[in-house]
Image (cartoon, rainbow, N blue to C red):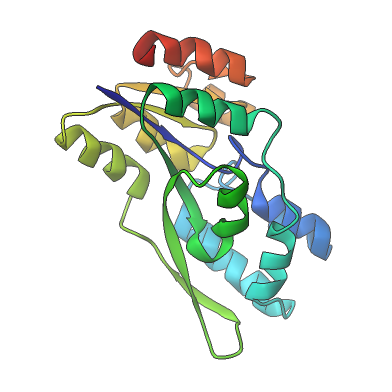
Length: 200
């Protein structure tokens, strides 16, 4: 039986941190996992940047509350869930996710958590486990599932490699150039076409 593991930002929703950068006027926060392969390094840098500008958790949550899924994302999830199970495997945080998950119909979400001080200032983060996306796929395979994984950035590559089938969705050219063996899709119809080989 196949199960689908899907990234969140860049695949189902716009990039949260790009929206934060635009709403706060802090262009440095536009940097994402499309640019930086080392996710913990990227997050530590983001937390320092937020601190330098006096931004707290509620400031980020206010931005996220205005984000809508990408056009067609809800329909894609509904189509997949009619055929098999789907897990959203993301490097977002549980404190960010609720408004987005609600709009997506609350699919199962595996993600991380933030650590705040008493003033709601983000001071650290706790990853669910090392290399969490790959290890999610590995655990599902241990339960005798086969996995199709969908992602767009550097932090998805180990998940796509571990899966029986990996799909890139609208990735930046640098990711395409470095990982040319993955099929590249530009719209949800193309994702459905590939998924239909496994879950129809």
